[in-house]
Length: 293
Image 1: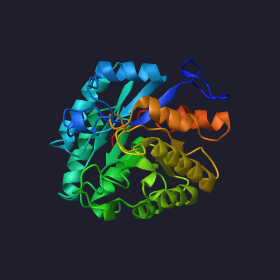
Image 2: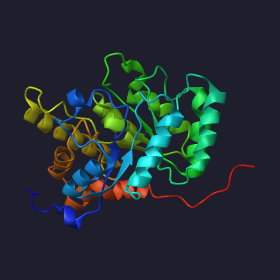
Image 3: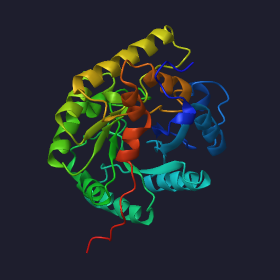
């Protein structure tokens, strides 16, 4: 049931900014929100239709063999979806600045690219690693948001010290012409993430990945707790204009992720902004630009 004052799927153009659909997803049978997910473009689009979601971003996973493999897969799926699923690129700074430059150069061949995703925590680097400068320069030129994994990792081998929101503050200040998105609202450092969004007008946060697996004890209480965290973040920031709905599908069901936002105690226009309006503005395709001379 849709709460009073909240528009239903037919009345809204929702956009999910955090979805994974990849052959390299780790152990789908164990980590997916339910058994036997139809983990195909067709299956995902059917779930999106049921949840009233028109568009989604296809984020890569760090398990992909290379950034090139990840982007190639994302572009293929985007085209199979007739553009409803939008491709996202990634790059790792570990090999050094020249390697990052080589990866960034390949993005010129993907005019439909929607964003860049970084994986600190899964890989041992900070967002302010100097080797990432070519990626940030490219993001500024193409007007592409940079999405940064924040907080808990799906693997116990991740190193959380690299994935704290405070580590994004430096690049947010030094690259005011780049829009940054703190994935997972920085969970468990949600207050820290909210402070970064409040302080930096070029920083956003998404609501993805805030829930445990549905089989976890006290799951319904965990949903209530996650909703309270998002509510508190909006109140700390003082605005819902830079909060973005995301699910982290297949970890979360689209229905549950949407309902988490629908039941926030906010003005209806703010819920609608989180569920789609903010993302449509942030990820709007930029006018074509030429390559740097």
